[in-house]
Length: 426
Image (tube, rainbow, N blue to C red; front, side, top):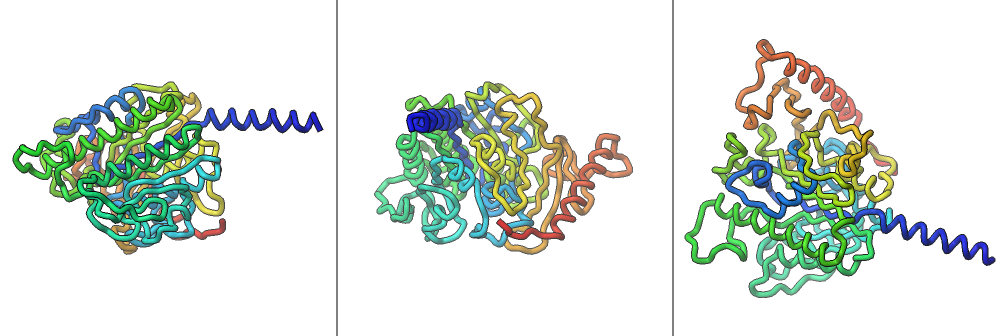
């Protein structure tokens, strides 16, 4: 009996040690926030000092692609699966799907989601999709996203709302409290942010005496407030002694909203183009990953990153298992965060996009420089991020011709899977 007790005790210590070594994970995804909004990306006139610091001490990915609008992105990022497999219609996540919430909860993580939901109007859905706790906007009724007017729902209860409360502050405070209550870890927080979607309005930090500015002026303020929230999260982790063992990821769900004009990335104009699948402005988003325990910092990478990659990355970081019975399309980039020498990045990323309904999809594949659409249009998105003119096959150089051949094979491969469909067997 004593031997059995000793064995059980030693086993429990081993498991506790493993749990302590696994990192906490926080994924923050701003709403309608394009690549140009991160000043570290060369975007102007934006200022993002907290994010720039995370990037300087972590990894900044310059080739991360989302879907052009929010629901297709949210379905893809949460499930690790291409839209042709599981996207149904706008505002819905198929209840049969398994998400990264399930993966992390099943791996022993405490899980939390705060911010914007918009994936079905039912208070039971966050728990159904793997989250222990939540504080969400648009879980039932769509009200003002920025003022808390009594329609934020927290763990099944409607918050009464208060005069002067700012919605992003309310949900952020709940996440910080969740982190404090679960500081022994490991925890997983998914924060699909309320900011920076239109309306382009003042934040609590906007100069009240300043004249009313343009949409770009207000977007600059909103991005600055988003950056401030990121700084608050980092400071809270530092205060609790959790920063070293916490992976922070920050991205956007699609390009900046239309109507925001005047921004640039380097020499290129970068107007908001949410909803456009025919330009970088509609789909390329910032991605900053900071992982102090991984020992990798100051890296700027052009690896193709696809939002389906998040689920398998988190599974690898947390020792979780991929969902059974369905195809997971993502490619884990956890090896990048830890500097694993045998890590091999994606050679290409693929997008199938239906718009808000489930009609005819647009398909394209991209590598580190070129993007090929199913219709045969090939673009060099370094030189032509607006996709103003496709590359002429007759005058294309050898690099462009090789990219066309490679990406055409990808599209053919994916189209064969698209035709087969996908069945739920798990």
